[in-house]
Image 1 (tube, helix red, strand yellow):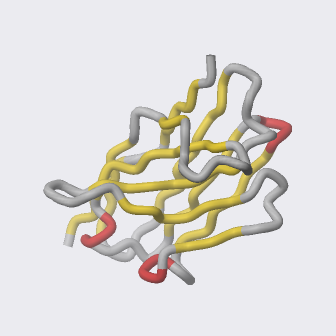
Image 2: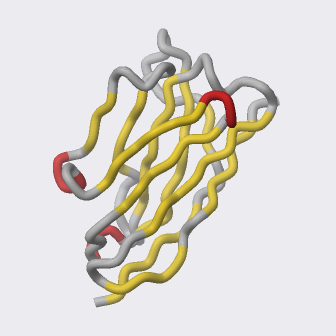
Length: 119
């Protein structure tokens, strides 16, 4: 069964950096488009960044462009989110997600990892 496990969250000061990792278990990682989402308290979950199965198509939400970088290593079944210049507004639970290219929405979700940015 497909399983996604996030790690790397934590507490960091404004301007700091964190790298999140998503491990794909169950042997399903490489054929799927992958993405990072986040949900802050009292807010809806929002798209942060996405990467196609071969990494040739990448997209970001406007507020993280130039600060966050998404990447993947299919040989290691891992996806990463390098987050720099973090702001208090980035505080949220971050989720990784996967979908088939033909799917209209993300089908598989991890449990999330908390990122807290202190001011």
